[in-house]
Length: 403
Image (cartoon, rainbow, N blue to C red; front, side, top):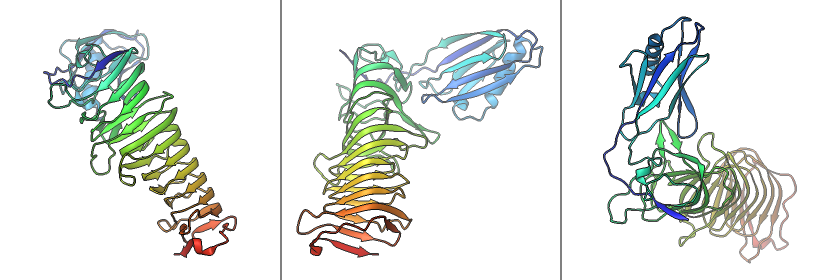
């Protein structure tokens, strides 16, 4: 496979310009003309103009021009419409290097032409061929590598041209020396880089990155070395068919934004050197998860899961309404979710229900100490045990405290 490197360009940027020429109206009918802007996440914003039944091409263009500039949609407001020639609307990006995707249609038989007058040239645009070592946007034959400049200097963020989901690339690799953003936050929303990779090896020092791997049935490896701003994650990741997601370091959010969904067979919450401090993992409520295995780190589980296993160095907090079928606990767990836990096998560590006073149900609690100093349970009156907890015969091997 050919390796295609991100070049971290620092070149002069050029604003995109697109021209729309109305060539015929809609045969005397009252038609609706619509500008449709497609954003990087696949969502759209529209601007419409409705004919009066017998318009000229000049009137249609003028109506579209006025409607565009009157729009308060934040994405549309970043592009300025002009009407330099009768029957023509020209859209120009307000900021050089920030691309846009806009098409025009009408609801009847009117006609028009669209011309990409000036192509976007942007240092932060994944979709600009000149930003890549092969002088081409990554193709299906490519191993994609995002790394710092070989000659030193600053890394360049990847913020635009983010919808690359139609290209089945081989490898997507981000190296530890790359510290710029991938994706962007705009108007309060996280915009993901959308890719279709065969493998993901992510070890970046970025303070913010967002990856959507679509339906790729792969097992991403994650080491985040960046420091996100307050309330953010160093890496946002989601996908609809993830086999195993292995997180060894960093602050990671799995489908944590409003409306995000993901399907993951197995999540491994692990560590590199600091068993309890290397990983801060949040799993969103929109995740469909089968197995969570936590050998270390801090994990906030906001969804349902079939099997959850927590080792001595792991600290698990559940939230929301997700249910757990089986919780195998050797570490620390704060079960705050109102979802039912069918079975808890408590071998060691701490099971603490005190952080949330909402009513919750545990069907079966098996206390199965493996060492002389056994587990501790902090119970509250809010917890309903469907079955009487199964206690060890040696009552000295565990602690039970009501709070």
